[in-house]
Structures are given as C-alpha cells and as structure tokens.
Image (cartoon, rainbow, N blue to C red; front, top):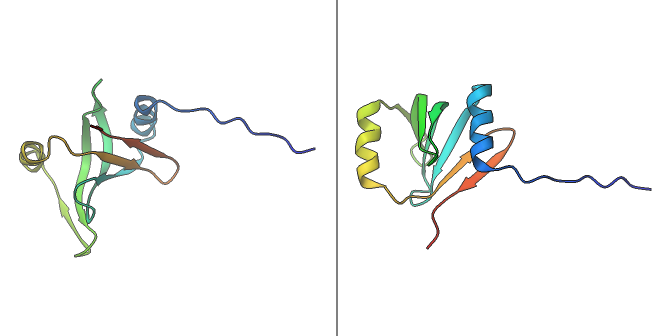
Length: 101
C-alpha cells in the first residue's frame, strides 16, 4: 500500500523569513521585464513584503551580465516599477507573490 504525502501550504511571509534565517541567495523575477532579475540575500523585510537585500545584483538574461546594485539603484527602480509583480526563487523552494487586478 502506498503512503500518501500530505502537502501543507506555506504562507509567503513565512517563506521569506526562512530565506532570511538561512541567508539563502534568492533571485527576484520582474514580472514586466522577463530578461531582468535581481539577486541577493534577504537581510530585512516588512509586513508588506518589501525586501532589503545584501549583495544585490541586477542580472540581465539577454546580455548575460551582472551589475552590483546600491541603495540609489533601488530608490530609482521603486519610482519606475511600483506595481510590478515579483517571483522569488530559491534553489530549495519557490514563492510567488503579486498584485492582481
């Protein structure tokens, strides 16, 4: 007789907290810009799931380039992409979060 494995849904905020605790390097997929990703380690977040990343890099899939990002880069990006949807991906687990109309 086969054993049935029960799956439990993980809340997005709990998964982000696990990534923070484990210091896992994550990759953020920008919904509107499929060829651009942000990589880094979560060092902080708030109840709205705004992330603070350490060692953040902008990764261009098309150009196959990486660019180190600083605070100024993120401040400018936030002004241009306030309604983007994001996909957080780790080698172990996946988390999808976004705003849907």
